[in-house]
Amino acid sequence: MIEADYVVVGAGSAGCVVAARLSEDGARVVLLEAGPPDTYPFIHVPAGFLKLIQNPRVNWNYLTEPEPGTGNRPHRWPRGRVLGGTSSINGMLWVRGQPADYDGWAQRGCQGWSYEEVLPHFRRSERYAAGDDAVRGRDGPVTVEDHRTVHPLAKRFVEAAQQAGWDYNPDYNSGDQEGASFCQMSRRGRFRASTARTYLAEAKGRPNLRVETRALASRLIFEGRRCTGVAFRRDGVETVVRAARAVILSGGTINSPHLLQISGVGPAAHLGSLGVQPVHDLPGVGANLHDHYIVRVSQRVKGAVTVNEQSRGLRLVGEVLQWTFGSRGVLTLGATNALLFCRSREGLMGPDLQLSFAPGSFAADVFGVLEKEPGMTIAVCPVRPESRGTVMAISPDPSIPASIRPNYLSAPNDLEVIRAGIRLSRKIFSMPALAPLCVQETFPGPDVQTDDDMERYARGNGGTVYHPVGTCRMGTDPMAVVDPRLRVHGIDGLRVADASIIPAMPSGNTNAPTIMIGEKCAAMIREDARAPL
Image: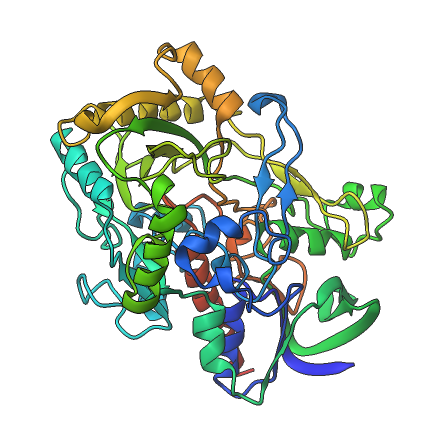
């Protein structure tokens, strides 16, 4: 048995933050990670994320259930199974979202989570050299950088977006998101800046922090309605870690509700059907799942070099040399080079579309194998999806994955926003900055013109951009799982800190908000520990 003050389950985007911050006060912290240390070389090369999306060495490789709304296709959901979690395998975009996202959380009853109240935690997390001192962090653990190499096609995309009527936005994380921008990345020089290589690395020498890798959490331990520890399995042996103060779940949107359910916290009827004895009937565990669903608009390119060619042969050799000796070139690029945040229609209070530009194109999957022929892509993403799904355990065995049903495109507005995004992407490609380079639209193709055509394309060809959230939703209503201080309703000594607590999707990529959640959770736990009894 291992004794600790705090046990953090999951060394991912939030878990590393929570463990590192709690260990600053001298508390005994044990951090459990089901995956291995982050020694796999492709983790640390920014463009190497393409080698990680389906790699079982560092990836849970979840599959969703086939659903008729998206052509009965299972969707692959990569989630990091390694120190750093998904921050070690993602595309490294650093996007906070809009102030209205967090003000909306507060209006839903999540006291303390307005934009003004979460901004200090965003600032504390980052180290960014540009932007406004009032809103950007200068000395946080995660180094955030602009692109050292801006691909010529990305420059043309930003120019084309301006020609189409949008303003250039030098910092979409300033509190004003709308407009065309070059991407910011969680990158330190030529290397990825995961939470393992930032927060955890800074805390590594503390004797009160213990990190256990290849440790699969198998069950939460309860004494009555109090969580007192966690059992984990490694090499067939189960070990118990006792928590004197609290257990913090940071397993992510899939694993946190799964562990709660197989431990007896969740919808009682469902738990009973699995043979799990309910500890607490909490119906919202596993509900409210939502994700960013995207479709791509791609063009065959002439008269310009794309990443498709730069990733092969002698050109790749040159790029490796640039990355190694100059910290530049396409190997420093992440998933997207430039962004446009815009509104799908007039009358909206803020952007509901993210158009992400890549100077490359993909043969079979959104982020799969690069095509051999030159190409470029705009990924169309409704940033505030209304469709909701579930994550539900199908067995009490922790090694058997939960059933994931995202229920994509069940909300009609999600389709309307996608249609608008396809039309706007085509408009951008038709602008003078890009039109001379366009040979032919390859996806969805020139035959896709009507609303019905676009719906068929979206349902049959769209996919995830890997941002699932919401399955341990924060709130005060009967379907909420955690309260605004991230304490599990009805259970003492147990909190959740990861993307699963998000009540409604932020307008953009989810890694920066998840790190902020880790910061805020650790701050609240430390406040509570200092409070007089």
